[in-house]
Length: 147
Image 1 (spheres, rainbow, N blue to C red):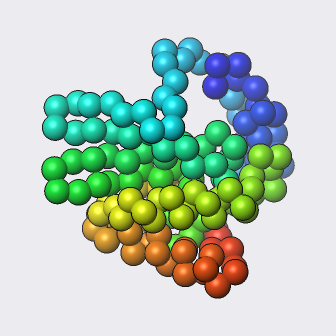
Image 2: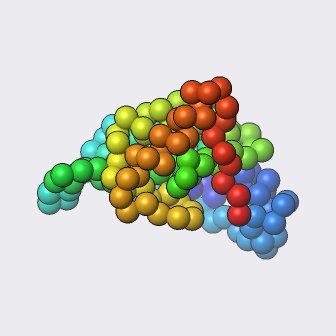
């Protein structure tokens, strides 16, 4: 983000199949601070935990919102509703790391699941992650998200 490097962020690969318009430009932007795995930010009674979840991409992060009575997961592109994941033909996408990240997210047992795209799960978010784990446990990659 700091450099606006389209190749490093794989925008060049995503433009080819029409994922982004050919005239799209990934611009550099300033970064005030970086969160590392396990770092927590507290705002009132809420606590946001940064989670390293590589697989979809090498530096992918998800965020667990710890609140009174439960946890909500902002999974970005690590996990989606109905046990789906999103793997792409890009330089830093890894099936092995993706399955490890899903295992980590399952342990959170989140109530809400808020992925970067598509359907949200306001309740029973853990159920969607368990669906992905069932396929992983059977030696299969979870079903792919398709647009």
